Amino acid sequence: MRILVLGAGGYLGGHVTERLRALPDTHLLVGGRSPAADVTVDLASDSPYQLARALAKAAPDAVVNCAGAVGGDAVTLTEVNARGPAVLCAALREAAPSARLVHLGSAAEYGPGTIGRRVTESETPGPAGLYGATKLAGTLAVSASGLDAVVLRVGNPVGAGAPPTALPGRVTALLAEAEAEEAGGGAYASGDGPGAAELRLGDLSAYRDFVDARDVARAVELAAVTPGPLPPVLNIGGGEALPVRELVRGLADVAGFRGRIVEADGAGSARSAQVSWQCSDITAARLALGWQPAHSLDASLDALWSSRTHTRAPDRVAAP
Image 1 (cartoon, one colour):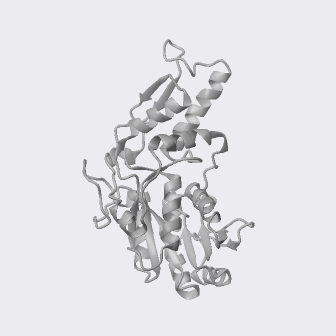
Image 2 (cartoon, one colour):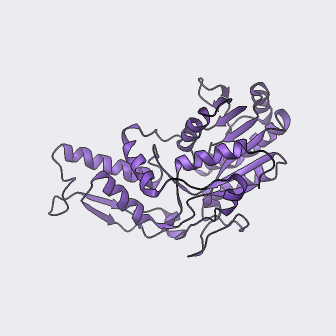
Image 3 (tube, helix red, strand yellow):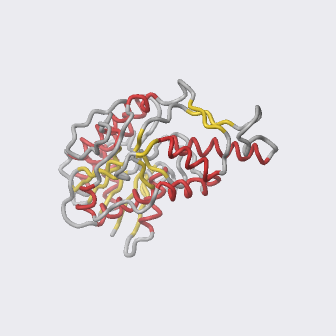
């Protein structure tokens, strides 16, 4: 089986690539802007014709699209998250119409959730910001393409290599800085006194559905190789809403940080204020793929902290 992964250099793309490389009887191809890529593509700027030519040469049995901008201006978000999937679908219809397409969407497409309720794939999306809106546009392009395609709506991924553009990676970077300061005689390990270490973050009262990056990669594998048609959209999450404070405190404990965690007004993201609850119903993924999360949040945090010196640099094109 020939599987082409786009966005392999990003956070989730790296986990997906590592997982798929281990599959027997599989030839993995990596697509991207790098000259070292097996297939040179740029979803933000390539025309459908250019991409179709590249896909025809690659002749994939499955294509996994992990490319997605998580930050940047409106042009960047729209080019990568909305235009990119549309162009990819147009090219696949021309060059590899029978290939299975697995596209990584985002739970941000749903928008604000109802406290105490898990959202199913049939929920009408209502993204709270531009990121979610552009990801939704990409999902709609894939779902309406007529291809053998499935969108995996990923919750909040946690695990090794998380970039500092999202809270788990940012907290890890701050704790690593505090650890380095302590090694130099700073206040990392102290919880008392005027010189005590302090971790200043925004409001941590929101609830999020955290999912291990390794579990996301396993869901991608199953979506790529499971025969027969799949539902157009599948939620991939932990299936449980946990306080963001729990993630931060757990990561601090793993790091051995005993300083103060301060929730400073105005230091958080606008989306956290707009979306106080997010939780996905993952029943459909279990029924369609036989998938369910295998890693606890503690295991995810252990992996994240252990990887702190190997964290991938944030890329303009990254995982959701």
